[in-house]
Picture: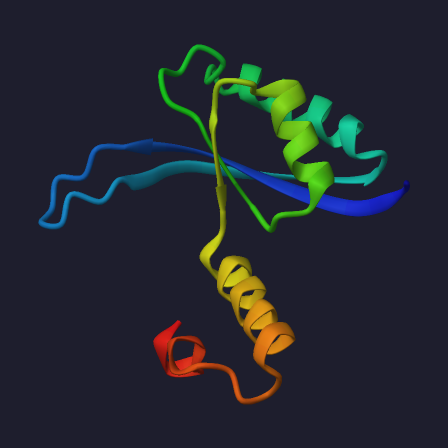
Length: 113
């Protein structure tokens, strides 16, 4: 399965402002055309270069494609894996339409997600 892919890597630091959200202090994007596991290898090299390999916490945010979860599990078994909000809400909307047709229930209206 050859495809064009990209994977961002970032480092965050604790916020010093109200709300407690972390601030992204470094970000790179690795682009790759080829097999998904090769992208994982290139991302892994960047993680090593940025000295993030021994971080206590890791987070993989993805669109839900099985190959992404496979790469994440292959390279970063102990990280938290999270489906991004945009794709999660789209999958929920699609499920509502599949179950109820275009007259999806109110909890699936575009204003609610």
